[in-house]
Structures are given as C-alpha cells and as structure tokens.
Image (cartoon, rainbow, N blue to C red; front, side):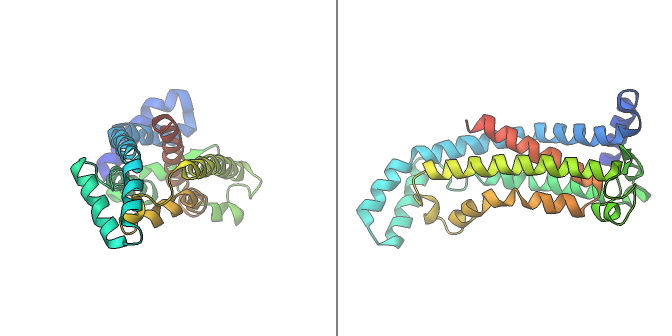
Length: 236
C-alpha cells in the first residue's frame, strides 16, 4: 500500500510546478485515471460480452415462446444456448467485478491516515480544503465554513457527481426501455435484479463523497466520471 502512496507522492512532486499547493490533488486525479486506463481492457471485454448477449435475444425470445410458462425448462434452454455460443450470461458483469480490488486499494490509500506510518497525501490541500478532511468538517466550520473555499470545493464535487449520475441514470433508462424485457437475464438468478438496481447506484456516489476524506472523494469522482465517459463510448 505504501508503494502506491509513494507513486502518488512522486506524481505530486512532478506536478508541483503546474499545480503548486494543489499538486497532490492533481496527482490523485491523474493516478486514478492511469489505473482506470490499465483496467480499460476489462471494460472493453464487458462491452463485447453485452453485445454478444444482445445478439442472442431474438433466439431467447423464441425459447420463451417455445417453453411458455415452464420456467425451469426455459432457464435450462437459455443456459444451454449461452454455452453453445460460448457467451457467459455474466460476461457483462465479471469485468466490472474484477475492478473492485483496484477500487478498494485506492480507496484505502486515499482514506487511511496511517499508511506507511503516516500518509503524507492527506496533509495536502485542494484550494484550501484539506485532502484528509471531510464534508462534516466543513459543515462544522472548518476551512471557513460551508460557504468558504473548502465548502465550494465540495459543492463543485457534488455538482459533478450529480450531473454524471443523472446522465448515467437517463442513459440506463433509455437502454432498458429499448431492450427486450427479461429475456435472458431473468433466467440467471439475481442478474435481473442487479440490472434494475444499477441505474440508481450512481446517486449513491453523492453519499460517498459526503462522508469520505476529500482525497478519497477525488478518487471516487474521477473514477465515476471516467466510467460514464467510457460507457458512452463503448456502448454507443
């Protein structure tokens, strides 16, 4: 973990001439973008998997008509179809799950003050807002109060997250409206429920940004924005 902290601090040193006191914040954003770039092949695999599953939907619809209300037979037939075509029913989900280790490593890095005996990243500031501080500190009067420079930093992050979450939600709703309802996904236990809930999870990022240290919030905002842009490109 201290290795990652050292890398980010080294980036901050390199960015110091450009960003001055906010160099550590810029380094967090850049480091997050670099990590997301490294796992981008997983996102591309997810997009290919989703397109492959979508291509099977007409055949799944035929199976639904053939088996009628026999859900057990329908589920077996759909799974056999996916196996025959070498398409995993979870192909759109697994690459995203594989990104979770990177998420937890970076989140821990940007929220733990005791990494390597002392996380120097959290001692830096972004426009007067401490990277180790929280929104609750601002509300309590730290950093000039809710309308000071620190408060404006958080309001800007909330605005970005709200905009990204709304765009992601509307896009997910349009995608769901244009899809064949329940075909395929409902035959794999739990996948349909996850698909229905996913659009609303974007708004949970607002809560995350409000409760984690600013350094972690920068990671979350950068990663969420990257995901929204990436999905817009891969699933256009």
